[in-house]
Image 1 (tube, rainbow, N blue to C red):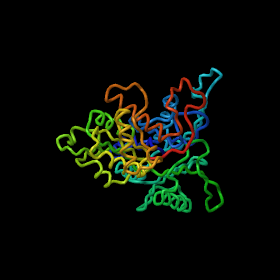
Image 2: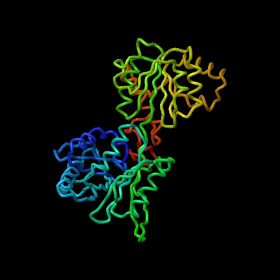
Image 3: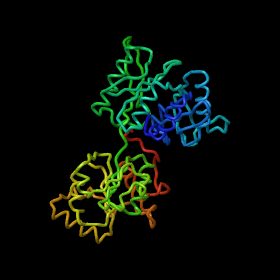
Image 4: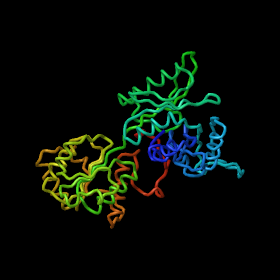
Length: 377
């Protein structure tokens, strides 16, 4: 399961708390261009409510039917959906792809520990043991425990060991998106078993330095995109939680001092929106010499030329300066704070993604959905 389960985790946890039976559909194979990487999740509960989706809507109705059947029967289903080009009424994929989906009843005693850890923004591992017959199983593990069983203690032990390696060391931190990326293990009797392993990482961090209308729009869009959002500004009158209802943390501190107190990794985004150069050189020096995958700062081209002179004088190298995104964002013709936030987030996606150009797809050739290593959360 990929980022999709994090987005629907609150709904699934509500179903668990209400003791509602539900089933999950998990994409376990994709060929050609499709908007649903391996691990994408859709779920439906006994009342018919749906969370998530597996293919942009075109086969979700059929998957929903399978999920409701799984709830009633307790059975596991594995279906392949393909494009139908002969005009037949059989449901198919208009994008000419093929998608393999496993649908299985959800066990609350397994799902609840996974969902609790996702909602607490903790690292946890899950393994979907794929069906060779009418069975499939979901196992969940972190350093403190193991939940779920394949029905074979030897398989459970092997899966648990590999899950804990991923959780504790970061192995498997990046899951390759594409067909055939399921890992094959061999059980004690020499039988091959396919398993989808996922290390669910904490949400990536977005840190916004400087109170502004753009910061408000960025905090809203950042949460929507799945970031753990922090807004920081040294002025107490502006740093009130009600000013940034979508932010996870609202911090009143000098930005350079706050940045020294946190850990930014390659998935982190640092966005400077302050229009205040009193401590900007120190802040950007820290950011550009750190590990953050995206560092951007707002301002005009003239302001940026002066900024580069100050940063060069502070000793930053050419390679470090090349990491700085300024003027920030893609050229979308943005005018409002909300449009500016979209242009910044669009650039962040392009920088962190799978080689996007930022150009209109209308004028490009080749696959729309690239297959490359992307972080799983």
